[in-house]
Image 1 (tube, each protein chain N blue to C red):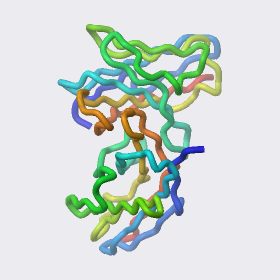
Image 2 (spheres, rainbow over the protein chains, first blue to last red; image 1 turned 180 degrees about the vertical axis):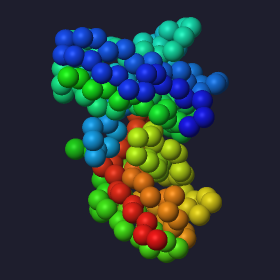
Image 3 (cartoon, rainbow over the protein chains, first blue to last red; image 1 turned 180 degrees about the horizontal axis):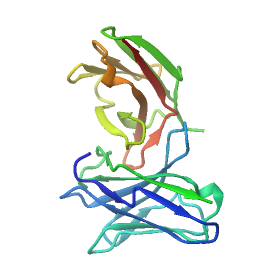
Image 4 (cartoon, helix red, strand yellow; image 1 turned 45 degrees about the vertical axis):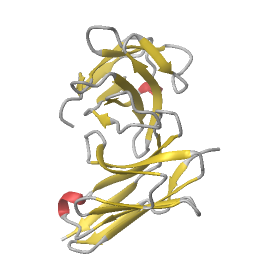
Length: 116
Length: 112
């Protein structure tokens, strides 16, 4: 997965704390996606962003979760007041943008969040 | 509801044999399908894709078949190697969308 970078790779938080997950897309990609994966399950879509715009957030929980992709810098997935049920692997993917009908999304290595 | 699902959760294969992983989808509006491989502790890795106007596409040691009549997708791996051991996911994108819907995954175990 050359190019899609995520940090941190592992994050431990106590209940009630905030978690910030970062994603830098592949060079030349302007579309970013966040997915969540529970153990032994498939990935579940959360949010789709372009620079400074949220395009589709239909998979985002209504509360405590937010995402941004600023003009400069990485995309951020923010989880406020974390609970144990937020423990999961969070994957970011990117695509070039500009092609209708779906583009190949390339994934980063993920951030494994553990809430104690 | 709309979903992408798999028939077999675990597939054991002898090294050198061919592997076939199956996937059923229910949304006939989907027009782009992708197979990903995920090794333990890593992110999904793109293997091969196919659009709905095709029924077969070949890559290096892999072939994807799409049967729109029965809404079935399969991934064939030729001469399976130990490095092919992983979980394989099929995923779909609906027309004019960009959201991947993943199936539950099939674990492939390659026996030496």
